[in-house]
Length: 236
Ligand code: CTP
Ligand code: MG
Image (cartoon, rainbow, N blue to C red):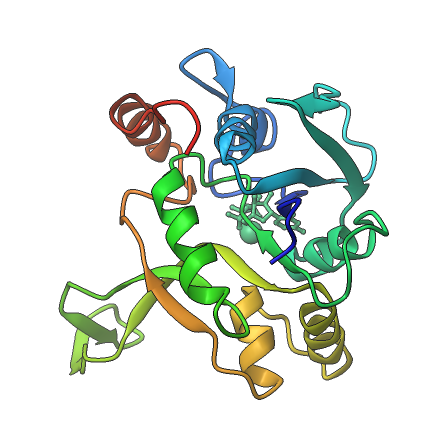
């Protein structure tokens, strides 16, 4: 682990189509402040986060132009068509001071409720090996739907996890894995999937389930409630 801390790539180049707002969801307000600022605020508060690389849609005119947060540098890079393209672009744009074997975090702009203690646990546990991700074991019964929307069968729940972010991997290994997935024509939905395809087994680190990804319009009220309850008490 670098003594100066880890950089965090924050993909924020999506269009927020499922929310269907008048602007991409990262710029819609939660408690009077754009969603993305809540997320960046939390990340920058973490003592082991050295800087933020925010990946924006090319031509984004809503980005507030933040240059630093809590004394940490905030840089930006243009993203791509898919989330995985944006993450790779962010990795490439990291400062040269971030070595190929240094760990980096990747965290969705759309997850403002992440807890600092969970970031600490991820860094501590996944940093002992080759990286990992926050997630949670599936708790509900899992159904396979048929085309008519009826429950065709019940899937086994054991060993099934939901994947969250942050995810933490070494800069070089993750870049190689994302490039290789892209070369094979696979659109990976998270970093761990790229690493799995490359033959790695990322560590699953259990985190709080209120680390929600704001996805629909209804999620904004929930995120506002959760942000009020899980306000970070200063630096962790
Ligand atoms: N993202 C990105 N580049 C893309 C697509 C998504 O950086 N080409 C980011 C989003 O901004 C978000 C995160 O990846 O912070 C998770 O993606 P998702 O929740 O799917 O957000 P959107 O793609 O914006 O939403 P939707 O799929 O509803 O359009
Ligand atoms: Mg999307």
